[in-house]
Image 1 (cartoon, protein in one colour):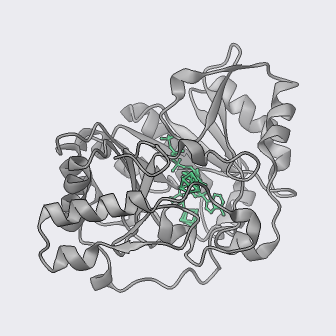
Image 2 (cartoon, rainbow, N blue to C red):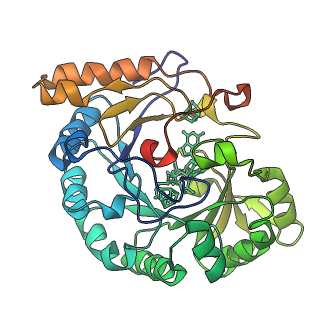
Amino acid sequence: MQDTFQRQINYLRIAITDRCNLRCRYCMPATGVPLKGHEDILRLEEIATLARVAAGTGISRIRLTGGEPLVRKNVVTLVRELAAIPGLEEISLTTNGIFLGALAFSLKEAGLKRVNISLDTLKKDRYRYITRRGNITSVWQGIRAALAAGLTPVKLNVVITRGFNDDEILDFARLAREEPLHIRFIELMPIGTAAASGTAYVPAEEIKGRISRVYPLEPFPDLATNGPAANFRLVGGRGSVGFITPMSNHFCSRCNRLRLTADGKLRPCLYWDGEIDIKGPLRAGAPETELAAIFARAVSLKPAEHHMENGWRQPRAMSQIGG
Ligand SMILES: Nc1nc2c(ncn2[C@@H]2O[C@H](COP(=O)(O)OP(=O)(O)OP(=O)(O)O)[C@@H](O)[C@H]2O)c(=O)[nH]1
Ligand SMILES: C[S@@+](CC[C@H](N)C(=O)[O-])C[C@H]1O[C@@H](n2cnc3c(N)ncnc32)[C@H](O)[C@@H]1O
Ligand code: SF4
Ligand code: SF4
């Protein structure tokens, strides 16, 4: 599908749940985000139906996210169903990694291609602080299991915030040198609790400068997956570092994605309030041609770019949109 700005839309991010086992401070309040009722959330077979329709419209990659996708019961069965859909070349997943140790091999066997794992600090106490409850040892078990299972390339998503973890930038770079891990530094966006907290993002250029003064970097186009990251190999290293810059240098002109929320809304953009209900028509028995037309309408409504700078704030939490 092509949108009104000549961008090819071939990637769908599906939030398969709005629930999460963690409470990352920049993402949600300590009490969590009000959850949708059981009936409001797409059933797994409904997600599979919509994925089949999406594939028919030209979507070739699907990423499962949330909330925390691995808290959704029967996620392995869902992956198996999605992996069997003709036209879907890649099913991937973004997770906090806590339950990945237990699930990595079954997910791989079911057809998952790769995982991105969120880890904002390498320090045990800080991890518990930023997630308000997580145990970093479980995340490392998840990372090791992902590598062993071949869910590769394994990418680590790191949100650097001023005064919290900006002293760990070189530790992460060292990790990328020593291990086959691809660290992506993400600029904090004013979404979720981050919007009101005044927490400051650290521009990617500053992070890159600090790394390249110690570890020479060279462009690493091989890791490109049509995602937003600009990737660099550390000369002589096993992994890489990448930069996702929604704030300092947004990548909207290359946008290739739609989002489907856990409660069945199609979102043309991460940072825009437009969304289209597709669960209602699906449950009312709409034929697949009609559902495909709803995908096409969502694509036609994609804005040229986000306007995070103009003061409008996304009312949905990141865990509801899927990141
Ligand atoms: N502004 C904006 N940020 C995005 C978008 N897609 C991803 N991000 C940010 O990048 C983070 C990491 O995204 P991932 O879930 O790892 O997905 P990805 O980077 O597309 O994955 P790859 O296919 O591995 O490149 C998200 O949580 C967001 O913070 C987008 O379309 N717009
Ligand atoms: C919303 S989570 C969903 C998937 C899973 N629970 C996880 O944490 O990977 C996806 C990603 O969004 C990132 N994220 C959450 N809030 C953000 C914000 N305000 N700005 C930038 N990234 C954010 C998280 O760090 C995580 O990497
Ligand atoms: S970033 Fe992911 S793990 Fe952390 S609270 Fe949000 S949804 Fe949960
Ligand atoms: S902010 Fe919106 S338009 Fe820009 S890359 Fe993200 S989803 Fe696409």
